[in-house]
Length: 528
Image (cartoon, rainbow, N blue to C red):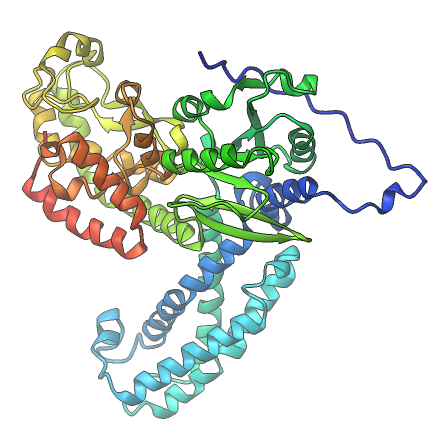
C-alpha cells in the first residue's frame, strides 16, 4: 500500500558557510542550478508587487500573452476613440457607424501602418521585456511613452479622411484610451496567471534518494519561497542516506504509477544517476507521459513520444522539462478568456438564474445549489456547483441504484433516474443546471472548455493509468464530448475525445467548441 504523504517536512539545516581555503570559488553544481532554475520562475511575479510570489511561474510568459492580445486591445481603443470623438457627427456616434465606414485600400494601409508602428513602439519601450517589470512605476511611464510615440501615425487619419469623421482631437484621446486599455489588459493577464487557491502550492515528487536528491531538497527549500511542497521521494533504494529523506519516502519506483494515479503531483523531478539508471529514468519519463504529469531531469539524452522538451540553459548544464500539454503564453490567453467569459456569462445569465432559484425552491425541500467533489487539474479536488436537479439526499441513494447503471466503464448514468425532479429534468434537458459552474470558471477550478470533471466515485474506479492523462488540463464546462453526443457517448469514446482535445489543443479549437455548444444545448442532443 502507498504510504500517505504525511506531515510537512521540517526545513533542512542551512548549508554551512564556505571555508577560507578557496571553497567559495567552487562553481554551483548542476543540482544547485537545476533547483534555482525550477524555483526561480515560480517566484518571478513577486518582483512585480502586483501578485503574490506563488501567483506565476514565468513572468515572461505573461508578457508574451500581452504581445498576443495587444493588437486586439489597440483596435478596441481605436473604435472607442472614434465613437468618443464623433458624438455630434451624424451616423457615426456608435460602433455601427464605425463599421459602416467605407473600407478602402487607403484606410487599410493606414490602419496596418499604425498597428506596425505601435507594436514597434511597445517593443522599443520594453513592454515585453521581463526586466522592465522590476520597477512598476517606470514601466507605467514607459507604457505612456510607447502610446505617445505609437499614436503618431494617427495624425495621418484626419488628413486622409474625406468625410471629416476622423478629427485631430482623436490623437489626443487615443493616447489616454490606449494607456488605460493596455494597462487593463496587463492586469487581466496578471490575474489570469494567478492559480486557483487549491493549486497555489505545487506538489513535487523527487525520484531518487541519494546525494543529488538531498541537495535538490535543500535547494528547493532555499529558493522556492513556499510555492513548492516536496510531496515525497521514491527510489529503488529502500534505505536512503539521509534521515530527513527517509522520513519522506512514500514508496519505490514500482509504486510510482500508483502514486501518480492517486495523489496530487504537479511535477516529477528525476535525480537518479544517468549512467547506472538510464533505463529507469527512461521508464519514469514514459510513465509520466502516459499519466499526463510533467517530468524534469538534468540531461537531454532521453526519447519521448508525447512530452515536448523545454530547454533552459543554466551554465554548462541544460535543464530539460517534458511538457505533456501546452504550457506557454497561450494558456494565459485561455485563462483571460475564461475570466471575461465567466463574468460576462454570470451577468447575462443572472435573470435566468433567479427564475431557476425560485423554481427549485417551489419544487420541494433542499438546497438550491448542489455541490459535489470533482477531480480537476492534476487530480486536485474541488467543489463543483450545479443547480440541484434531484431530490434532497439523492447521493445517499446511489448505492441502491448501481445495478441499474446504463453507462459503460466506471461512470454512473441512468437515463430515467428516479431521483430527478420535474424541474430538474427540464434544467438538464436545456443544460441550465450547469450555469453555476461559471463561478468555478471565475475561481479558476474549471475552464470554459476542457474535459468533463468527474466525480470521486468514478475516478476511484479507474483501473488503467493512461486514463489519468485527462487530468493534465483544467476541466471544462463544455468540450468535444458536449458537442459530440454527451450522455449518448460510450466511455471509451468519451475518453478518446478528451485526449484528442488535449493533444490537439489550440485557442481556435476552444472557439470552435464554444460556437458549436450553443446549438448542441438548444437541441438538447444527448442530454440526460
